[in-house]
Amino acid sequence: MRTNRLFFWLLFLSSGTRFLAGQSASSISPRPPKAAVREVLQNMASGLKTSASSLSFGNQQLSSPSAPQFITITNGGKSDLSLTEVGTSEPDFRLVHNCALSPDLMPARSSCGISIRFVPGAVGLRSGNIRIAIGGDPPTQPLIIPLQGNGVNSPVTLSQTYLVFRTVLVGMTSMPQFVRLTNQSNSAPAKITSIAASPDFSLAATTSQCVAGNTLAPLASCTVAVVWTPSDSGSRSGQVTIADSDPASPHIIDLQASATGIRLSTGTLRWNSTAVGVTGDSQSIEVRNEGHTAIKVESVEASGDFYQQNTCGTELIQHQSCSVTLQSKSRVSRRVGISISKTPVARS
Image 1 (cartoon, one colour):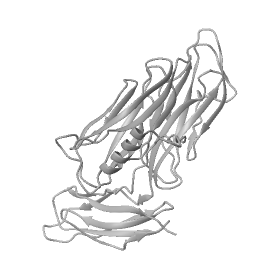
Image 2: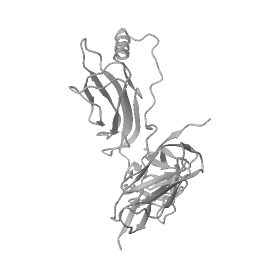
Image 3: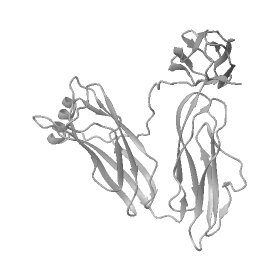
Image 4: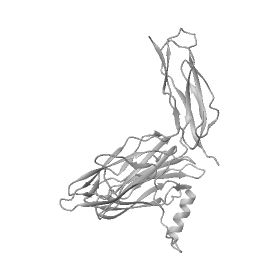
């Protein structure tokens, strides 16, 4: 028997992007040099703004890439800009960006992103800059964003320093992700003094889990298993911090995850075969907001030979549900979709 199948998916419109940016330097000279004043004025005149004025990466194992940090570049002026260069001055800092370079223009009020990883090539303090050059006549001073990190050659190493979790439903727990902590020393043991995870992240119970108070023998290793249990919808960043007797302590695992508050009562509806032009039985699906943030329902749409009616209105508050009822007029098995676009709504 041939059946009609109806597949559902959700299209989410992001309300913003969360960036892991370093703090700007706090010390300001009471009498800046004239050249520095001139550079600031020229940068203000260009309308180009950055989400951070500097980035600091802390300790990082030699030749091991750090977790990325991000900077948003915004053209806050009323005119399009021509960016002629977005790059780094030192190979210790590796940059990826999506900024349009000359001859393409950066439109007014638009933004682009820069991702930077620190990969130290030597022990000790490493410094560099991001240089953003702006074309035009007269020429404008480039934007300079200082970068800094510390290269360490530690016997205690992590197999990776950055974990990204797949999107899960609010209140559900993700599958664990694993990082191996290894004592590379041939002779000296390493004692683990503490392991701490940011809110909504936790350590999973596994047989080889690293435990605070335990000692890693020379050439021994243990596993840090991390899970993600979101308390609300949206993106989160966090860290697992491991303190031990190694001089390069603490060892940091950066974490990035996202959660959705939308739960569907089913992901698939199926109809038995019906004659062409005859309307099939109706079936419904429940859409529920499991999060603590209100959801704005922007549209509910059915495609193909399916028709829908819904009770969703324009907003779903916390723990509120609505239903989408569908009917089919096709004998041929088709894949179609319903999209429910949403953005978080701030509530007082």
